[in-house]
Length: 248
Image: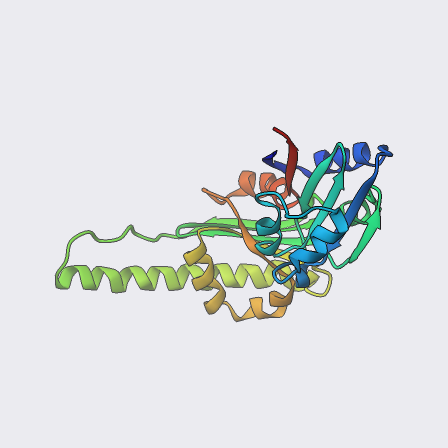
């Protein structure tokens, strides 16, 4: 019976795990599943490659929910699933703990745009790897929702909607200002904040369509966008989700 643990590992800790796996010589298999195949990947391929009758609990489900692909390292002593921070394209089933392609992916200094927004605050940053190149943070007044009903509440909501529109227009202008010089270099765009707010903002800001095909769909968990949270969030952006199975 196998039991699993699930962790978020920073870039450096993920590379450390790969370095450790790379020195083991026990019989093992590695499966690289690219992002565009993860949601429909065939369970039978996994079972055949790993010589198991059924994937352990959580393995197949985690793969099919991943928007960035997955890498399975499966041996007698060490059993891991790594969900990388950004979409991978490498594909293959290999013998041993074949860490090379994932390691090469993680040590590449991608150009990353972060757009963090909540109603009232925002932060925009361009990073090369984990190094901040350019940023803009700010605030905009948006009142909390009116709790009472009636015509006054409807007037309040119209006023609030106007505040949100003004904030989104301002943030969109700053996004254009910061991202335009790098628009052809950006490898990945990642949002942070509350999903409904992000979705509404993306609909209003037409400039973001230029990088839609490079958008990573999972959101960073940001409570208060600002300079400090912007600089700290790049570590989360680079983090991988790692599941490990051990005999229980």
